Image 1: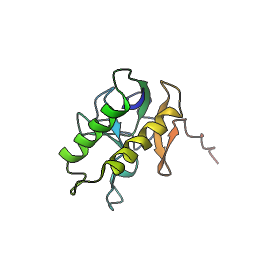
Image 2 (image 1 turned 135 degrees about the vertical axis):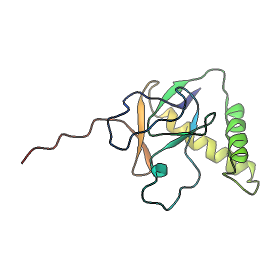
Image 3 (image 1 turned 90 degrees about the vertical axis):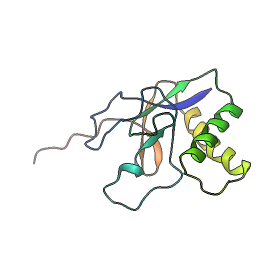
Image 4 (image 1 turned 30 degrees about the vertical axis):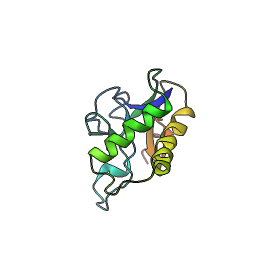
Length: 132
């Protein structure tokens, strides 16, 4: 199964890059973000083991994970971290997990991604500015 995992590949390409997550760990988009303009939460994914952020992540093939186990992993992490205070329905959790899987399915394994304009995009170098 294709899933999104943390990567340090291409770190440093952006001035706001950071990767405190563990290389290769499953990542998720936080279900909420804060209002602080200096916080990177609009651009990061959270590692499910380290509970740390990264602005770079990649698509990996994890054959040991299936739809049911993936949904359960996300559910457990969201509840344990307090991302959800009231027990959401199974439909909500399935939708949350499926959005991540749908994004991973759109790209080839090994593609490095970042979040831009509130969506996942292939990470490409920024165009160079002309000195003028």
